[in-house]
Image (cartoon, rainbow, N blue to C red; front, side, top):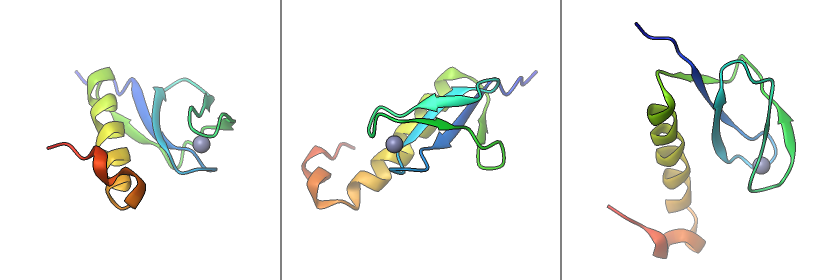
Amino acid sequence: MSLKEFIVIRCPKCGKWTYAKTKQKSRFCSRCEKQFKIDPVKVIYAENHKQAQIMVKNRNEKEMFQSPLFRAKRQS
Ligand SMILES: [Zn+2]
């Protein structure tokens, strides 16, 4: 049974990926320190907490690699 309890969402202000519970209506962005409304059209559903964490990590790392500032932090 898949409940799709978590969502993965991108901050509309700075573009950082984060996750939230499906029922959450807004999310606080740790990068730009702004509260933003979760747009249900733009979310990606995750099966569980762990999958949501992995999806966020992968997306943020992918974008970090494109920035010269974070190139040094690259891991496997
Ligand atoms: Zn942000």
